Image (cartoon, rainbow, N blue to C red; front, side):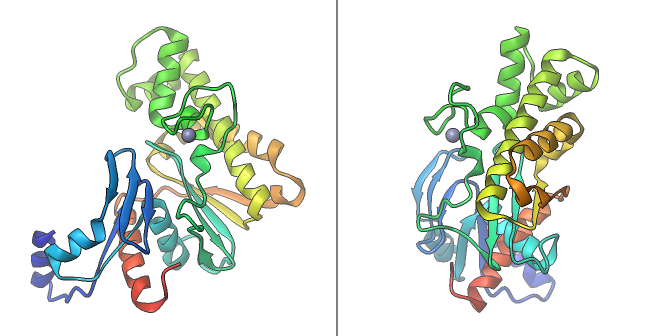
Length: 259
Ligand SMILES: [Zn+2]
């Protein structure tokens, strides 16, 4: 962190604040990472720790919510009062903008589309439930499905994608199933909040050709009435966009009360 600040000095930039975006359940008001499954963190007072090291005001927020702020200010959400960002990849995340505000909910976990149940008899999820969107459509879930149905080892996502693109039926089925789960999850968001647009992004988009059709079909089938008019679009974003989201939340903390 100190190296980054020194680097900023080199550009003649005065750093006024620091924004950090972390996957998982993050309490922005308290600056605490309550639970991050990927980092295996529980109740880490990250804002306080980073402030002690840097001497700067620090904002800590959920990574997808931060990305949503960046999309609202600079991206595909500009000018929209109601939209959602859905990220696919290692996890399935969702950021919501309602009436022009990024929603965190009373407990900081609004928009957990990854843990919407789409199949009560589906595979177990790390959250303790079964058949969540994430338990079917996250990268690890897709690999597990290929191993289970094909009885063969598959090393990583790159291999799974490669096999699916070369016509391996087990791999193709696993991606199709993931697409159906994501499409249903998006329809749930559309039915609840009626966003004008849903932006699908995240590193999992690299395999989008393998599940785009299923996402669209499942979304259309499950969206109620006019909710189906929601503009569902994909937007591949560079990794830096996550950092931009974190920076946007830091700027936001200077100009608005945290929501
Ligand atoms: Zn779950």
